[in-house]
Image (tube, rainbow over all chains, first blue to last red; front, side, top):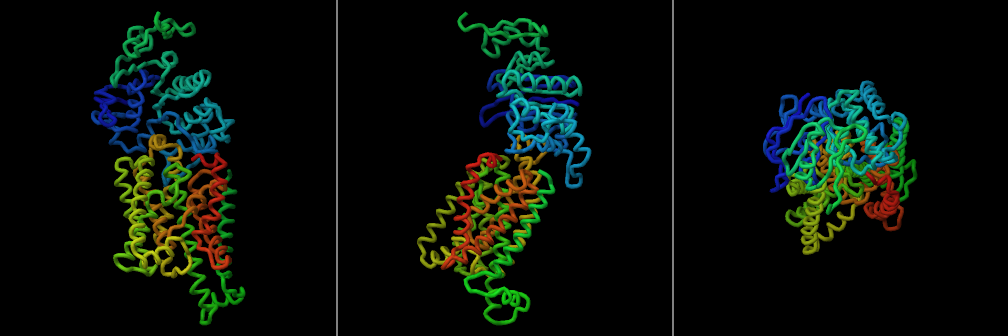
Length: 260
Length: 328
């Protein structure tokens, strides 16, 4: 599996959001893309997932330009979860997860036992087997996000792109979702790229951080190397102290009180 | 929801439609005994009974079936593609285009005969859809620019139609009979002309069902799952144009049916569009034939377009008040 962006420039109208950006996704690793609001991190993920077409440059998946690869074929290698997705009212978890089989189905190959097995496996991986027949809109925020992740898992791709999977969740539910992401990486060897807002959670759950500022990669590498007080001030305009996380020893960003 | 229950719903609706069609043949402002109707159906021949049954009631029932199937399915496809529970089959300018084309045919070419107006109505709805697509431009993958373009184009076409109609008395007289939406006085040849378009639209709508299921999760998710959204959008638009254009050509604009029926269908068979589309089509036909029969029993006869609105409005209000079924 390999996914890379080469000389990527993306604009909305006149405004360029990404400028000549290069990025190689590290195989078999959890990568978190972080940066201030409007820095282009979501745009980067959406372009990697072929939802946006770059003005210049290209995205290359397994040695082939992603926009020259049939979209269903891409969907068998790369699973994508957009920001705050919504399901139709009353839809069951099982029905939602079954939609993840779409790239493997056609008029000649209808939903069969292999697909049912993939759905069951995905439900099991996110711990929702017992809630499979409940409606998605009855679930708690954390369970709901796990159901959506199960849908992407049912696609059976090695690579997962998650756009802010913890948005609108309280801290306990954020941990619940990120623990799941960590397990997918550790137990199933999946490569994950996710956009996150919270630097401390990104540092804890990602092996590789990509720090984006003004549509360019400011720095990337292991969290302890990327998250320094100087870089945080450069990128976020925030004065902070970086401590050692008492549980993991990783970096823990503590903002200084304003005016101190 | 098991597929057993869904098959039952489908079977019950087919049965109901057969019964309603029989009632539609048997009931009318002129009283005919059931055995007289049966005799006229089987043997034909002359006489008043045969003239009424074969010349009036059969064409009217056939028009009700075809138009109802078309509008029900068109409503389901329109709501599936826009993810908007308030979307009506006429949203993308289809109905307004058909109306303007019929009026132009009357004013410019002097076409007064309903059978001749069919082709103009069909062409008008297709052109209006093309215009909406052109106005929406690159936003074809996204329903919002399409809906905005549809509303704008519909308003423009309706203004031109009003201008033409109001400036010409004879056209106004013919047009107001057409525009109210009626199954009466439509020759069987009108229905036979639009039937192939309805059939093509129904096939396209069924083929599009899986796309609509994916679109229900949002455009981004659908594309992430490998859907070619522009292609699917065009298929849906083609289905709506064929179905609504053909229905409007045959019976004039009939509101509410396409808006209400998909909500009832979802109540009965749940979310998957491979069930919602056929059940909406059957429900549409049942309701339209029933409304037409009911309208005949009112003194002086009520046009079916009016009848559907009278029944449809309260049903729709009920649907809207139960918010859960409304989230698509």
